[in-house]
Every structure is written in C-alpha cells, then in structure tokens.
Length: 428
Image 1 (cartoon, rainbow, N blue to C red):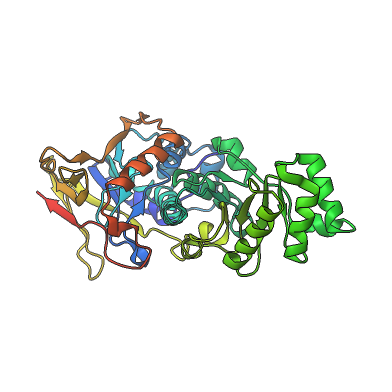
Image 2: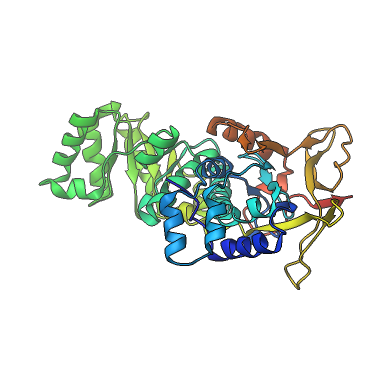
C-alpha cells in the first residue's frame, strides 16, 4: 500500500508554491529532534527508524493517489504531474533503532531538495513519535522488571495498526513476547497467550475449564486463577496441572500480597517450579513496587501502548539549512518564543569517560564533533541517493539498547521525574 497520502495537506500546497516560484529544487537539510524529554524522563529510546525506511520505499503517488488529488483540487495539475514521477533521491542519516536520545539529538537528517524532503514530514514524524514513545516507556518497564520477562498485551487498548507498531517498539525495548499475532507474522516477534476469564466462565465450573485447557495446551500452560476465589483457583490449578503446571496468572487484587500467598500455596503443594505471572493495569511504577514480591513475569497492556502517560515523543521535523542563491549552504532556524531551533547540519557522538560512562550528548553544527578517544559516533547512513542502505534487525536494536543503557550513569535508572541523564552540548 502506498504511504504517500499519510501526510498533511499543507505539505503539498507548499510543494505547489515552490514548484511555481522556482525554489523547489533548492538543496535542503531537514532534521528530526525533540526539544525536551516529555514527562521528566531521564532518556528516550529511538524506535521506528526501520518502519520509516519501509514507508519511504512505498512513498509513491500512483493512479489512485493522483486521481484523489486532482478530484479534490488539493494541488494543481502541474504539481500532480510532478508527484506522479516522485522518487526520493536524497540521503538520510540518523540514530539507529535502540539508540538513546536526549534533547537536541539529531535523530534523523534528510538531505534532499526542498520538494523531495518537505513532503516526508508527516509520515516520518507519525512513525517516530509513536514508536519512540512506546519504546521509551517499555524500556523503563523492563528496567524496573530486571531479569523478569515482560509480555506486551495491549492490542485491545489502541488502534489495530498502532498495536502492531507498539509490539514492535516494545520488543526493541526488551519485552520478551507479544500477544499480537500480526506483530508475530510481520516482524517475527515471539507470541504467547492462553485463556481469558470468558473461557473459565463458559464452563460449568473452574476445574472443568482448567482440565480443558491442560488437555489442549499441556501441563506447561498458564492457568488464570482469579475468576472466582483465588485460593480455590490455585488449589484447582494444582489439582489439575500437578507439579508440572507451568504457571498461574493473577489479574486482580493487591498483587504483591496475592502473589506471596499464591507462592506459599504452590510451594506447600510441591509446585516449586510453577511460575507466577501478574497482569492488571501495570506500569513501570507498579512493576517496581513488585520487585520484592515472588513474581516471575509481567503482562503489560494499556500503560505500554499509551506510552505510560507520555503518548508522543514530541519530535519535530525542521528545515535547518538550505541552498543560497550563490550555491552555498546557509543555516536557518526558527526563532519564535518557546520553539527555538538550532540551524545547521548536525552530527552527533556520545561523550564517554575512560570507564565507558556517558557524560554528554555532543552535537556538531556543520562540523564533526571532537572525539577525545573514548567517544562513540551515533549517526549511521540509512539511505544513500534514494537507495536504502540500512537493514538492521530487531535483534540488532535490542542489543544496541542494552549496550546504550549500560553506558548511562546510575541516576538514569530512577523512575522519578528529573533532568536528562546527560546534558546536550553543541560544538561548531
């Protein structure tokens, strides 16, 4: 499916005007960045870059798209003719997925003509703003969970396509699996799931439901034990599943207290290997509060797919340099109050101490930042002359995030609101 109309009307009206006045082909540099970390977060996680590259490959104005633009007179015939032949031919550099970002980080840089670059603004921002918000929330959850696995299960709390994207972003941030089958098919993410309360309610009694599930899925399955009385539910689960029962799931009550009682009940019956999974509107704070409880895994839904209170990363897509009349490139920047941007083509590195601890995000303006020997380059080529050159996998992104998080100072792991974990420094 074409992604060309996943855009705002004004991008095409700007295109029409610049085609008419002769400025459309001026060389330009557009950049994606965030002015701040929303919600007082200590860091952000970049996710969605791969989806942006996928979208760029299908950003084509075919017959149906052109027919719509002509019928509705969004733009004139000359602009429609130009769009019919559109193929992005510029360069794209950016932070790879799984990298951390901070205020001012040049997360994505598009070098192209004004016409080629301006019409990509909305599709790029819609993907990066959503996916990075989900990944940033998910990273806080997996940090709070420690070695205990988290499962993404928020499909019923968001748009159907957002659910797939959220599962992908959560997996980058360290989630072990998803309940969403389309995410499994499309991206190869492990999927998991067993039964809901409706399955238990369908049967004449809880024990009958458990017997049916174990017969169908084996003793390693997870039985949901809180449809009626939890203590009795655990007893029924033990009786049906025996010592080989894989896990029980708790979805209500004071989860810490219920988990302790359930663990004691399981152990007393000899089910020392049966795990306890908890769900019920968890977020990073609830997960952290359960750190001392005998819990083996978490299922997270609503809070994850809504960014845990921060549903967007706040990224913007701004023109930061353009070709002048004499052919040179000049920096340009927005100067309006509260929305100031920094002009000039950016590159970035993460300044590290000799021990490998991050101490600054260094952004070079029209110059390469100075590397003191311990630092790490952040931007990589993604598209060259219109051809995609980056094919990083989700496993690459997961490994990158683990490595990037290890570089952060200890204060970055705090869930409370505060300043960014490291400052952003400009050179140039």
